[in-house]
Image 1 (cartoon, rainbow, N blue to C red):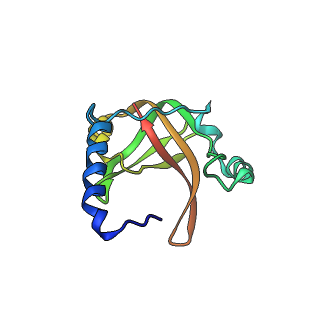
Image 2: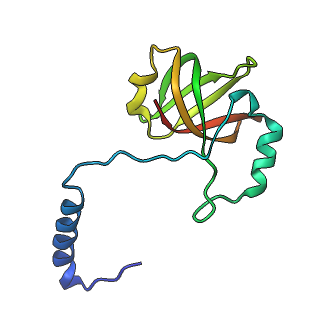
Length: 144
């Protein structure tokens, strides 16, 4: 929380804006993503995800592991969800199709749309429950 005397709000606002402008003067910096391990999408299954959940809860000081997969085949048509989230599907070498969602990655639609492959995706595998059906979903945090 934060407490400020009413007569100091204007000064606080001015100093905060000044500091924010100084921090962001260089423009936005690209996020750096460091994945833990390369995986073959064929190896992402119920058993592996159940095993991975033993390490939960994930959060500060116990970050969820990031995996990456290369030469990823896109299946179907990618689409925007809620104007800023990117939803698409990928196919593993064994023919299984996995849904993928990139929250706040809607601006990257042009990198996915019209392509049949991606060079690399970085993701957290997770369970997705929708209308009583549970499936594995890849929560994508970066793609190229």
